[in-house]
Image (tube, rainbow, N blue to C red; front, top):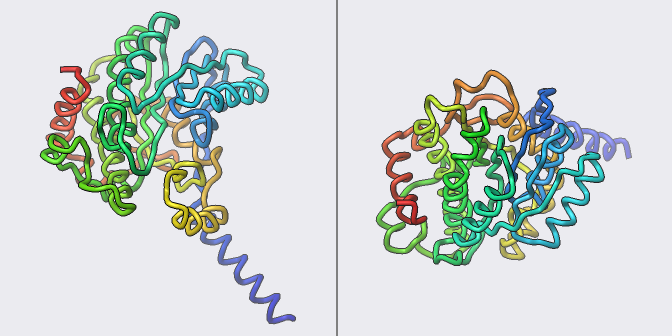
Length: 318
């Protein structure tokens, strides 16, 4: 019995070491209040998007939940209003897998809202399928949808004074690549829809998030708007809901033991949105509420500019 107790104690000790030194993230300590400010958070009906929206609502912001699923988003808005005591939390329909929907959302927002201070590009998918416009799902939603949305709202951000664009990327950007001929021919960043290719497409989309932020910062230089990309940590969320059943069964037990919860995973997003003094670091990449170095491809200005030009053509902005 004593041997069993020693084994259990040893396992718990090892778990604590791994969890607190590898997986547990930092906490944003900013006390900034957002009364009178307006924020958009995409994909905010669940996971770290919902946790981010709740944090901003608690600080007094007017928060727009920009989501595809009306029922889930309205339920999330109700939860956030109740928990934050802030009634300025509303849902507006946005399907990032549809350029038409993105343009409709932007038009509706610009007509209804007098200002925009924070744009949080949080939504993300990993899985098979194609968008309404024929693009691979990860490429179309994670990058192109947010690229179009940001560009349509940039003028409002600039008119509102100091503003920020925060894009949730991932550490997996280091494994991404940009195959522009493939994008031109297949409207996707990978060549098939297998599980492995879906993971690769996700990695590519996260690289695009980093490159987009880098080029956006170059284009916004000298304005009142800054932008940041980030790795939120390893989080147990619904991101992999479109994975195959066997993959979910494989990942879920490990995720429940080690991964951050949504509140923990939202901390670097909130840091990038609110932390004072990081304006000179516009275009940079953060993790654990601190500046981090990106992979070599994520530092390639020529690649970032090329991606921007291609994205403008694909979204009809040029």
